[in-house]
Length: 274
Image 1 (cartoon, rainbow, N blue to C red):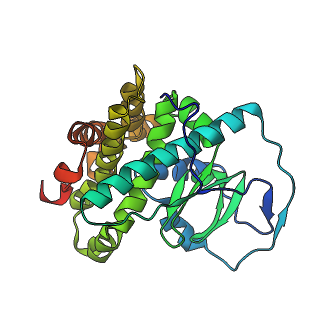
Image 2 (image 1 turned 60 degrees about the vertical axis):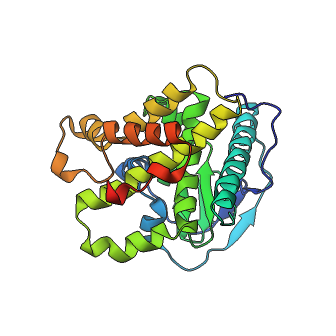
């Protein structure tokens, strides 16, 4: 992705160096489960509400970022700005006003509006405070654990989280939660893969701006494929159980990403009627 020198977002909050006392830690298998839950389309903010406690005392100390962290921070800020521009334009053309989310960059642990979190949660969106939380170390997990390298794989993750915010702005999150008890698992899965459609819509607009480089779409597709229910189950269990799928297969996620990428708008995004 051609991102160097482009405008960064003004809605980035750097909380690295902020430490909370008594933050709930998530270790071992819990980290893997939450990372997988995140990448499969789930929003860890839902899980954080279960362990939410009283506000914790926080201390602040200077944080010295490495050159690699600086690059990732700036890259994330540019990607966020590109999502702001794209979704503001799409919302405006449909008679709505887009309210941008805030990106919170943290290291190790963070207090969100949805509860306490450690970096093992992975990137997540909290609808209570309309913030996206990212520990930059997650990008290494994406590259090494999930075999999805490349800067546009990272951009895909952020676009996916922004998709949660777009759904919140459109009232879809609330609608789905209200209907969840009456939905079949298959119907709920179609809601999850819709996030891939939104990420694809954004990628289409980035391409039209001339910002994509050769191989970028393949990087996003590789990330989408790596976190399908079937791929995750095969990696963790050695076999696949289709009846337990919760967020869509690799094929479904790639298909919905490409639907959005080809359409460039929300015209094909009504997954509930297809």
